[in-house]
Length: 384
Ligand SMILES: C[S@@+](CC[C@H](N)C(=O)[O-])C[C@H]1O[C@@H](n2cnc3c(N)ncnc32)[C@H](O)[C@@H]1O
Image 1 (cartoon, rainbow, N blue to C red):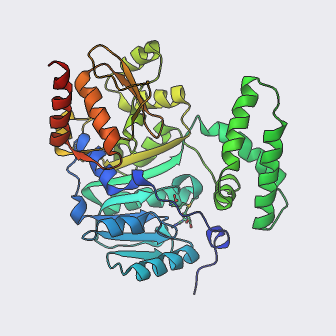
Image 2: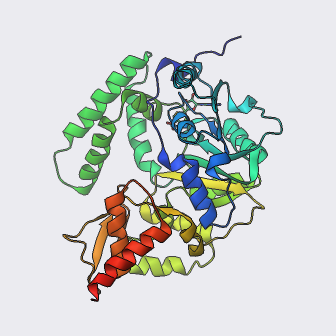
Image 3: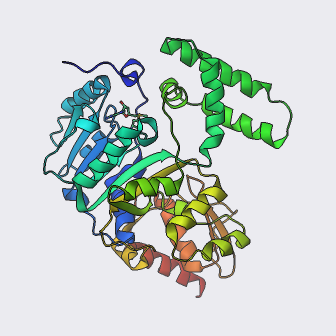
């Protein structure tokens, strides 16, 4: 018997790709934190809640000797994805309709498991299944990516979400609910004329929401379930399934850059208590979304990134110089900002030269040795 249409069959979710879920990224974080992740050329990847495959299919295209499996409860997007796979003639990716709760890959293991935009939006029992599936199906050095709405920052969005859900109560059809959501968000945004901090902040939030596609608004703001978690709660739930924290998919999110020195000193006092330290970081950054990587509880990981792994990697950076010039002279501080607003500053000539080359080559990565050679040559020019 065919599955009942789900809300994602009725209103399509936009097709997104999420580069931070790519096995490439997961393998880098895994290696830095002590794992020996599967090579990208020969890995197996499972995506839960894969929608129409817009994230998974490009991976399969780029890594033709690896295998990709996606599963989604909504059959409509799966049908669209299958059509795309057949038009591209890909044989290394398959999309399956059905619930992850019934997915039984028997003894098959996956090196990378991705669940983006799923955990916070499904009932508690599905969350338990998701974590159990990761435990059961991850290879010994496998890595699971799970994103979720985080606290305390999600309180902010939830406040608006509750107002929106109040406004559309009693409206039954998706087009009407979306139309009224947009109208109401615009009404709220346009009403904020005074300049106090609350109003400036709420206007920024609402303006951002107005930029979202209709399917995104419908499923993210109007969904019945949208449960945020504190980081420590998430880590505890994962631990109950034999999984542990490996790191965040965005490396910079694990660090305290941008906070006052006094806060950084206090955080340092938490020493090796990494989980607690990151929970306090979430309080300090008012974090609203996390993209957490998990691995098996008994996998041989480190709590600090290992710099000695870096020479074996390809290096890329979207960071651009945010001071007038990338001045390589010693003692001159230069600031850099990435496309995700991560920031750093350095007066170290070699570092500045390397960042200059990475910026020019972005998004093409450079082998570490070649980058080092170029940066050394460039910074040596200064001392001649
Ligand atoms: C918010 S969308 C996210 C889609 C995509 N992963 C992304 O982040 O762009 C959530 C997806 O999870 C799917 N989903 C919900 N419950 C599921 C379940 N029990 N098993 C498999 N997929 C599920 C929905 O059908 C929907 O496609």
